[in-house]
Length: 432
Image (cartoon, rainbow, N blue to C red; front, side, top):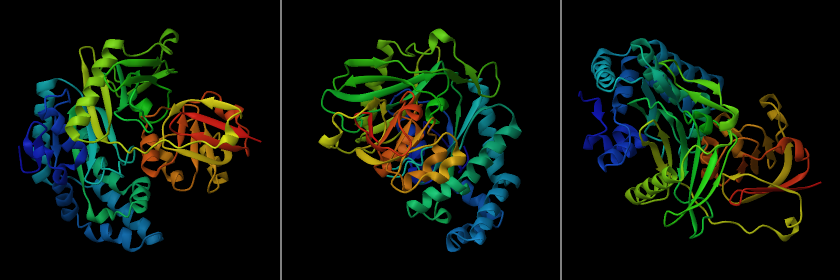
């Protein structure tokens, strides 16, 4: 491969400074013999080469220099349009297309094109759901567009907001790209090797839904939840409410499909599969020498690991005695700790202006597009979602308690009431 490319089987692919932590972590799993998908990565220097060739360095520096001004927005727009609309320079494009064609030829699969920014999947800054992934790529024009879109995602408004809250200058970082075959997933999900507040008995959590995992990542379904002990024993299985799945069938683009009624509450994993996945999760934690969060998928033949990143953990908090006998609802614990505030029940994003600092957001779906509200809320409760969604990952970073998958939360919790939520136990209480 060229100087811009490295297969995940190559030791150089484990260099996070060149290929980003997402790709580097996957390369590490591949080379340790874990079932992570093959593929290759496009080095961040290819992005820098493209930016230089298009003469965009001044615009990149201008975004931070003119922060919160119309000029900053113009600079960011110039970066996005330049990266999305202008041809990729031949020294990058020619070897990239050659490697992609070879991957298609050897696997016979559609392609997944995923961001692997130098700043994501690090402790304290996961950037979960802030960049882009493109699934089901088949044609050459679509592949080129997906790569350019991953580059441009570094300059998306939500990514820039996230970087600003973490003191990151986008001009000082770069975007690598991960290219892999697409799994024809029967089921997908996530896993936490050490959930917040976990004791010695319940030490791992898995989530699962039918089809591709984007429905979990976006908080659109309430997934199955599997609790495993530290010794790998399966402690409990809580079926979810998985009324739709995202599938990639018959070489079409991924699309949402209704789940048959008899499968909505049927667990996606057998006990044996859950135990196998728990064993992999413990292996990955040992390999990375830290608590980890993973994403996985299962096709007709086996389980695959799609991603591994550091997991933010904190000890459980003690709830105040005043809340002991208050009305309560339970769901998936998804954040960290304990929080109280005024309930703000939101049925549509157009109502978010009602959300005041210190409120607890009560909503139906909590996706990563809501990441900007985490800077000023006391907590989040959602009727859908689970503990491995992208917004849950972002909440853990900021120490924001969340309880997801709480049935009828927007109907039963009174708007304006005082709410307390436990992001470790997965319980929300209220008083009027």
